[in-house]
Structures are given as structure tokens and as C-alpha cells.
Image 1 (spheres, rainbow, N blue to C red):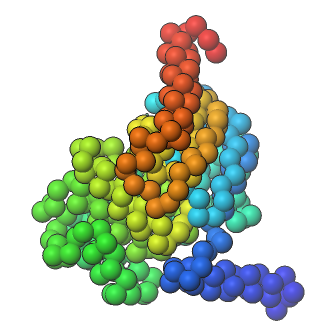
Image 2 (image 1 turned 60 degrees about the vertical axis):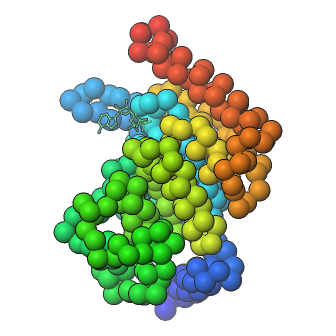
Length: 291
Ligand SMILES: Nc1ncnc2c1ncn2[C@@H]1O[C@H](COP(=O)(O)OP(=O)(O)OP(=O)(O)O)[C@@H](O)[C@H]1O
């Protein structure tokens, strides 16, 4: 084995033991740092040349919870898909723990707005699916996640027998069961009623606070973005880039009554001002008044 191979093997195994220890709650994993480095993405269907994202730069630390806000069509999903490895940037690159992203990887789990549970599998089978594919089923962990998501008693139900909120909770349990270092969530709660959404936010934070991972969470809901995040990224109108990054200086664990604090109000006011500016710019763009 070359020195380089040996070093790499040692680095990987120390990362694995670090991750395992962190999942057992003894320390935080240090994997899952993301660098979005000068990323641009141009879509060119039928020669239309849509510059979706340009000059996008963002460094995210391992275990950070980042939310992304921005006007419709500004490129939020495009950025997330570049991090997931579903899309290749036209310029620049995304690195995870220093390594360039070249395609999808199980260490980066993705959740979309519409849940992707398999309709022909029960809830427990859905949650077990990823670990089973890797021959790594830990029934205690799967049952624990089902319980944490308030789904005990529904293990043998099929997705269509559950409400939308319960299906989305099953989707979260499935995501955590896959044990990704990075969780990429594209408006996962946007179809839910206000009460269910609050319960989902609390459930997500509860599991995340126990088992730190890096999260990028896209939302159009300013309060949701602030309540969940360590930092809120506000993107500019298309072509999207990080217009500003707002620190959320609220202690954890978070509770919903924090939305009345001065800090919450400060961040909310700033976020709304930025979004308003960008929404106006997007409308002027659409009307052909600015580039
Ligand atoms: N496959 C594609 N081909 C052509 N254009 C695309 C494609 N995917 C996205 N776009 C365009 O790129 C821009 C950014 O899209 P994207 O979905 O990333 O934005 P978004 O901020 O996530 O939008 P929303 O908030 O509405 O979900 C939009 O103008 C969109 O129409």
C-alpha cells in the first residue's frame, strides 16, 4: 500500500469511528463540511440559455443547520441539486470534506416536498429500506426513529393509510435511518398545515440535535427558516447567488416561543427586507426593466 493509500485508509477509518461515536451521542462527527465554490449553472434546453445560478459561494461547517430563502425561480433547488450531485455545475465546484462532488452519494440524503415513500412497502419497511440495501439493518435504531417521529403503532401501515404529515414524518425517519452525513431538504414541509408543520419542525430539530448532521433546508417560510437555522442564506433573484447570510443567535434546543424574542424579530426584519428587494428585482426582470 502506498503512503497515500495508507493515509487515505486511516483518514477514512478515523472518520468512520468519529461518525459512529457521534451517532452514539458521545461526540460530534466532523464530516459533512460543504464548500460551494464559485458555482454557476446554465440550463440550455433548446438553446434557451437560462443562467439559473452564478457566482454562488458558501462555506458550511460540519453539523451546521443552514436554511435557504429566496424568490421563486432564483436557483435554490439548482444549488441543492449540485450539492446532491444530481447536477454538474457549469462553472465552479462543490466540495464535501475537501473532495469534489462528482455524482450522488449515500452520504448525502435528499428529501423533497412530495414524499417518495414506496407505496407498496409498510412504514417500517420503508424506513428499513436503505439500511437493508446496504445489509446494515439495526432494528433497534429503526424502531427508535419510528417512535421518535411519533409513528409507533403505524409500523405495519402502508403510506396511503397515513395523513400527509405522518407520511412526511416517515420520510424523515427513513432519511435518518440512512445515516447520511448531509441532509438536503427541498421545501419538505411546504404542503402541510401550520400546526403539522410546527410539529414537524420540532421533530426534525429534536432528532438533529441528538444526532448532528449538516443540513441544507430550502423554504419560502421566513419564520421556519429562522426557527431551524444556525444561519439563513438569502439568495438574490435569478441568477441566484448568496446575497446575504444571517446568523441566528438563538440558543438550542429551540422552542416555538422564541419567535417572539428580539433576536428572532431582528433576523426576520432583515430577511424580509432582503427578500422584498429581490422579489422587486425579480418582477422588474420579468417585466424586462433590468438585466
Ligand atoms: N431542467 C431545467 N431546464 C431549464 N431551466 C430550468 C431547469 N431547471 C430549472 N430551470 C430554471 O432555472 C431557474 C432556477 O430554478 P430552480 O428550480 O433552481 O429555482 P428555485 O429557486 O428552487 O425555484 P422555486 O422557489 O420556485 O422552487 C428557474 O428559472 C427555472 O425555470
